[in-house]
Image 1: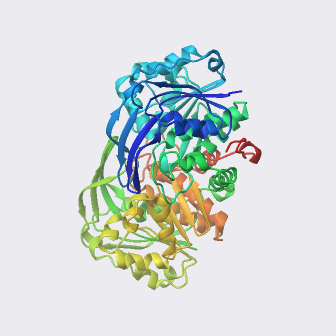
Image 2 (image 1 turned 135 degrees about the vertical axis):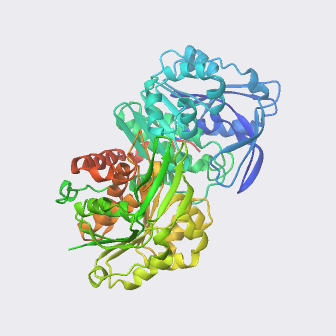
Image 3 (image 1 turned 60 degrees about the vertical axis):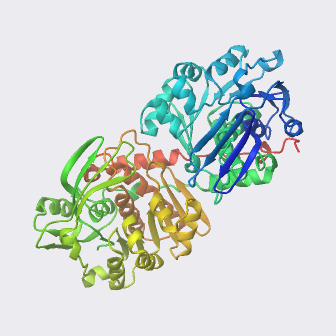
Length: 314
Length: 314
């Protein structure tokens, strides 16, 4: 039974980074998120592609037992993004965005899809995110992602989506842009005040922070000495997070922390190669090893109360 | 008995940030570091000021039992830095640097100072850092800090200092500049290879990372929703780190982690106000409270091996 539904873009990406390039390689938020989630649970993907989309890509998803009933194949060309990353690779620069068939994408859920308990609305127009939300019966968890483009042009609609989600995923830059504030702690709190019980802020090489009303949890990124292509890192993170929660079944404080932890580690694989090349070949032991490494990086021994006295000073 | 010796600048700073400004306020690397260290151990400060230096400042240090025998008061004006921080406050911009009496500073240690076990060489010319190192008898621990200016102009001398220290403190930008690499993990490893057993990388709001040959430990910054003036944060961090190690006495793996942890928390006080205003009024309970908050931010529950299987997928 499909436990996680993922709605987003399926794309062909042409990407150049300091470590190489690919042309029209498999990409898109739903692609990364679905594969990441498929390590933990049964996934259904909702998206659209054109007739140019290589059936071998669909076979890859099906090979991971991802239910592809929600992938519309329509006349025209697949969404194509072309962009590059400079030396520090902390920002994507767009050459061209050809929406193609994605421009008329209207996700239409089947009755079975409307019953799926865990929903991830990847980065698409907030109007479509709302439309999907309205089609869902009674999801146990709704996680959403977005991007600077929608914050700039569709803030009001996006705010409606944020108000209705349980987990908001944002990166540093988006947080600052949405809140019009510099301080990330302030941003996290302001975003929580809109309604989501959980805000997960992604900070690339600096890890991630989980914000809730009464706590903040800090996650280091897995220490990668080489990163080839950051495309899809956030989608992978989110897909793994939602997929892992779906696998655990129960949404509680500890499980949310576990899901973010697993998400950061899964993202570290995605960026090791172009497209989904590395993400498709992760094995259990590798993932567990990164999970343990990250955990070992935050083992802080206790500090004795008596070691921090004013030492007789004024 | 003085356990920690701190050599660096004593300055008057004129600083403007989005939250206000001060003119000719007490500053300098030795000032911040000595006060921070003085919360934990007996400190000796080595520096130089001009005759314009307000004796009330010296009284402040003495009031915290900081041994001021090493402060030379010479003819001329005190080192004066004037600068500003823009909206994001992640970089200091210099208006003017008037070295004044600091230009001819030649630290000359007394016999007693040469015996002090814990040494922090704050940001000064690497030739002076080497000179101090050569005067020391047999320090138990040598920690050093530096800045972009010396990396640019005195890289060879600075490298000599790095080779001879136990703990190198650097920030993100300095690491990248020194190593001529973007990836911070690579930078950390390369700096370790120069000789220090420990490299502590400071990342401002993103916390700090401790690098050693066989481990990395990650520290979140204390979550401050408002930060008035970042001047002195790194010096405070380093001073608290060295002072706390001096207090614990034994340098081992756990104590190093504790010292960085305490350092990050102490730095969070320094940036809450201009000059040393807030740093001078920290009390034990406040510090312990921040130490506990930071610790609570990195409590990651275990992840069951069985929850991360390939789930029957290829």
